[in-house]
Length: 318
Image 1: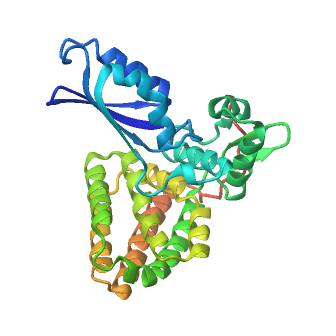
Image 2: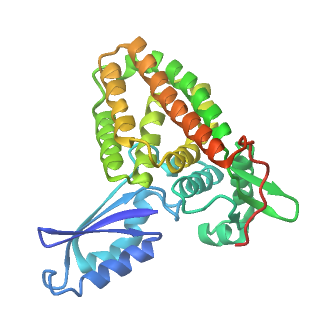
């Protein structure tokens, strides 16, 4: 998906979202007709590539494709790549997997909803083979369920499973911090920016932004450990999806307090204090586990019976 901003004159900025290069060019052409534009031309277009649906395109390809049309209607445009992960460097199945994970994580694809293979092959302009590989990968890590003659659908995650996953995350990230602290010592500028974005999202109660920034924060720390096995194990737990479940499950919790815990983590990493960073990360995940347990227990009491783990659900029609 492309996030992009169109600036009209010097003071008015219109943020927009598009799912294709074609939508970007159409919208700029449309905005150029507004009376507020300068001689029918938009001042500037800034495009930030988050997870492009046209995933097989590099930044240079996108720039080349839109230049002929967009240069007629705007004075200048820039394209920025993702800061933490460039999808163009992944294989085709991995890119499709990442896009699906993000859509499930932000709630665009709901639990129980079917993953229609034909729609994905058409959307991504690929054969069924990479789509099936991506789906199998998500089934393997418990994000999707599948059955013969039914296809695949988004799996419903239980509170118990989420608690167990965050307990594992606490251990993994504590280990990552022990080595990442040295690499990040005095070099936490980007992490601090993400930390501020997490707190801002918590104050707005913007779950989509919180989940996105929170995932970027924790992944950056694990990645900084330069332990490839650790990163792969961490990614296999699909925290994009599990964090979303936790946020929905804990709507009454003080998210600002949880968000601000990231500040002490950054302080410890910036100081190169591996022990403190490790303890802070472990405590942070531990607090979330405590909140989940408390909420689950309260829901059990209200229901009058213990909560059992979810069994495989049937897919919804779609």
